[in-house]
Image 1 (cartoon, rainbow, N blue to C red):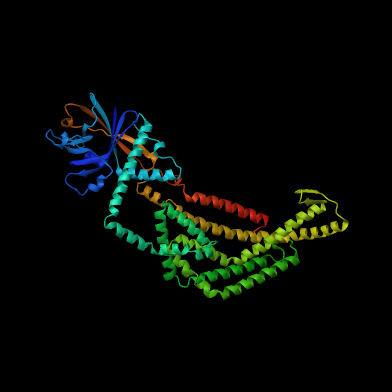
Image 2 (image 1 turned 90 degrees about the vertical axis):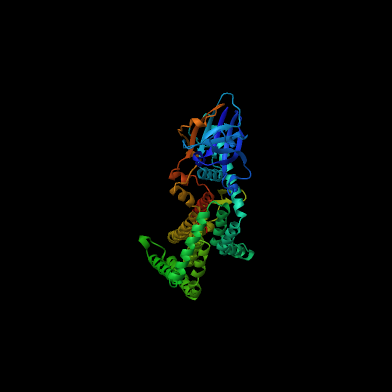
Length: 526
């Protein structure tokens, strides 16, 4: 018969009388596991909550002596101590062995085992390996049995902690804590109620701010990034205070940037006049496009002058978004970039339409030149006899489109590249605000202070001890072997490799959107 006792590390060196509480599990191979979860000293009655109402009374720890009344009680476990030895020793078991009993005592640290349980539960939600499938190093004959024991120990510790939290909430500190939490999140809850209103949803459904709010709500509901959301709010408040109190007229910077972009676009159009980088462009088409684009820029400059008072006040609501978080302020930057580069986006649409017409026209007329046509009913290209006037007109139009194609291609490449740069800037802002919430900040902080543990870091260490002869009973010889359940600090690489959360789904969507954007730009669609 195998006897395993899981005991908190601090109780192994205790020097006071106390009751111990926990559970007993009988395994399939006729082995008994005792899980000591909580204790209560005899001198103090205020620790009743730490014992846990759902745990059974296992036994005692008392001073060694033949006249002790606790020694004669019928309990599952009895430990004793004296002043000569530094640790307690097993004195009595509920089982009745024949001659000699050998018991293995496993010492564990409560905070580390609770941290290990939180890690295993969080990984179980992400389809990661749990405690039962980890690598358990040590002096064990049956690994699967040890895995089940460690899992049972973590579960009992977590249930006892949750029970203590519920008792703590019933006290006066529970309502005070909830009141403080509600007041600190009053602004956030108000904004959430506004964003979930039907009128606001209908107005902001297609905006980046509303999309970010949906992503932020997923992070908040998952409960995995509470520290990130707190840091996000602190950074947002700092940026808000900086914009409102330390920057004079922040809207002027937006107007200055807009006029600077207008000047650079005019310089770009001036460089396309004539023969840019030695390219021979069609003079008439080139002048027509330059006149149209310059006129568009002049209209946009006058429009900016008209809405200048409104633009100057845009930074006030953007700064106030810092009360919710810095990520919401970052989500408003694409809106500002759209205001600054709206004319560049319009130029891309104009050139994309011309490019698509050119490509489609050349493809169709090339089939006419080859004496073929596309049969819509049969969905195939087949031969066709064209009359002379059809071939004559097709040749003229094909030649005209062919000679105009280099000019259209240059304009399309220039403004598509400009549009692509704006898209990449918005994508960089999007990745930054998502990583601000998804970065494993809490895990990194735990690793820094040496409190990051995972299921691959458990190993057993034998602890030599020399029990006092006074603790040996006369009837039964109980041999006790002591091991320490050590959980060492995990490497830094595992901090990031173990994190698989919401960001992976967003990254897959980003890769698909980038691929679709490049395909649209190559096809000339928008």
